[in-house]
Length: 185
Image (cartoon, rainbow, N blue to C red):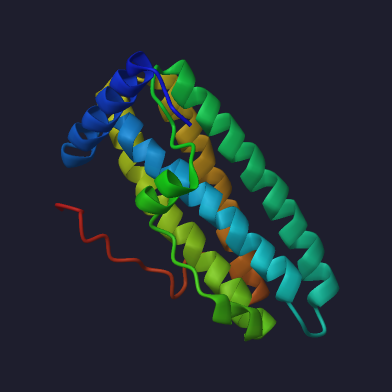
């Protein structure tokens, strides 16, 4: 498609601003990573839903359907909040791929239910690292609506992590300590 020069100029300005925002992170840029993670997480949750097997497969499928619906709502809500905050959420597969920090692997379709649940719990932990950073940035930038949403998202992720860990016979954060290489503390 050919775009007019005005659209090209707006897009170029967006790319330049995104580059600046990702070199000195802002709440909007960090939240863009969260949006990308949520989009990729949707794919991973479907992978678990479709390929979970074993005695608990039916119950886990119901649980994963709930997680998928929740994740999609969070993705939509967070995109809207970014727009409310005068930010541009990632909106293409290329942008999601560039900004996500979720890992994916097609071989997960062959693992047992416990390994799928464990992977999902680790995904929530990865997501939380970005949420925590974005909360701090949103508070620092005086963006209370964004901070409030992110705090609630973090609480929801904690609940889901505890539930997933319980399925594995573990406590909420057992074996889930992630090392945040960007953490300065």
